Length: 289
Image (cartoon, rainbow, N blue to C red; front, side, top):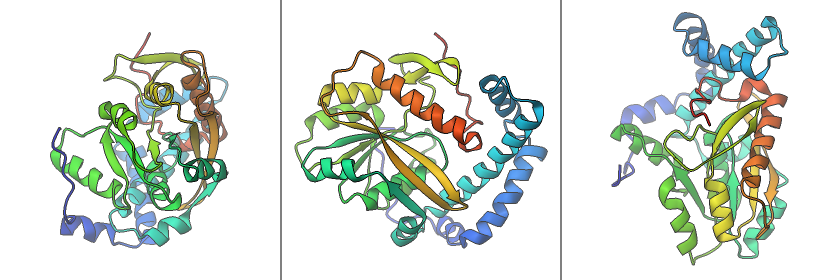
């Protein structure tokens, strides 16, 4: 999709669904989670297999409890994404807290852009919205266009609600190198399987030889920008804490692949700490060496 255009105004039915209060949506999310796990069995075999592969020392009871926690949390995140269409800046600001962001803010205030790489732990969409309003600087975020034109326009619209500029991932590097304006945040979620890219780096992740996108490292090497990992944790239902964890200093000379190795270790540490919050329904290990 080359000519990607946001909606001037979201369709009425989208706004109507999104306007339902979150407490009501959370009640519905519980039903969604139960149906997904036990009735439709949505990717249940995938979730089980990946949990068993990543946690071979855990028994069946632990795997089952973690799977149930995943579906429960996945249901909550799903309705929170529906809410993005109408949620206010004040609501996002109240529900998502940034922790240890001062070094990143100081870098931006000094006129240097930064690279941030979240992961699919908890609600990555709310992380984007919080960064859009909570850092005081523009945000460029990588986006993989969807094949469905309506879905593509919808996600483009809601992700850019608070000013984020959504850029296709293959164009992000050139946009960073050509940028001559104010300091900005360059964001990309990079823990997906790099199925569509031949540029890959393999490293150990959850005890498995795993392929990662190299985009964050390529951009950091070419631009000399500092890099932070954003670790998102759920403090309570609908309330999150996002911690800035440094991955690389500005201009730091790293061996090839080291930045991705560091990123993988940070994502793994968070996933092992809170296993139910990672996106286990996604087939993560399709690409093999």
